[in-house]
Amino acid sequence: MDIIKKILHLDRRIIFLTLFIVLLITPFIHLEMKINITNPTRRIFNDVEEMSEGDPIIVSMSYAPFAKPELYPMTLAFLRHCCMKKLRIIFVATNEAGMSIAIQAMEEIKMEFEYEHGKDYVLLAFNPVLSAVMLGMGESITDIFPEDYYGNKTKGLKVLKDVNDYRDIKLLMDFSAGDSPVWWVVYANTRYNQRIGTGVTAVMAADFYPYLNTGQMIGLINGLKGAAEYETLINHTAEATEKMTSQAIAHIVIILFILIGNIAYFIDKRNKRKERHGTA
Image 1 (tube, one colour):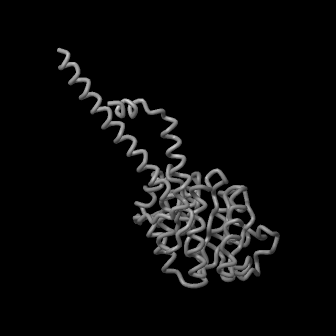
Image 2 (cartoon, helix red, strand yellow):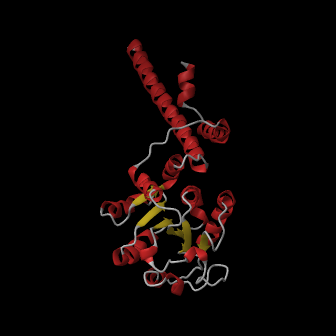
């Protein structure tokens, strides 16, 4: 059969083109995909949900632009939830790019929630000596960060009122593309009993499940899927959910190609066997 031969000798460029078209048009179709919520993501959501208005949290930005496709959507979803709860947000960064990403994120959502720098959130200056920073915050946050990112004195800022050290922080959430969550556990959780949550790329997530199992981390947002889960929990569909939908449809297309290819292979094999028996 000619169609079987055509399938078996299908140019791989047609497959690539089909996937490209699918990924191109899917965002414009606005398909709804059910997102199953995993327990580590729900634990972070529940922890924030139980906080009261004005409670202070620390958000550690530990990734560079290369990791934004996975980590930025979850950062936005988490920050949006914090703003919904009217929490005080204290940003720190473990690399040079982290603070600029924090600025970008707050620029996207602060007008919606009327958040003001110095009053509702603060960007603390980057300090490259991470171990000293992580330990020092257990003694005095304002001593370690005498000025914020813009050069303002931190003592006297409304957002830091009655915030002295880890004992006053309800949660430390680290969004990371490296091993910074481990260091927060070592220096902030182990020594000062600070509650730690993290959001990481999917390829790294398995490294941190032991810390979840021991209770050294309260929860974990796992890659783009975790970001979509958090968007679902806060009832705000955004970039992560849209990307997960496109990804799921692309996977379905790939599976269909595999199934069609295998069916064609076995049909062709059966036909050749019949031909050999007929010739004999």
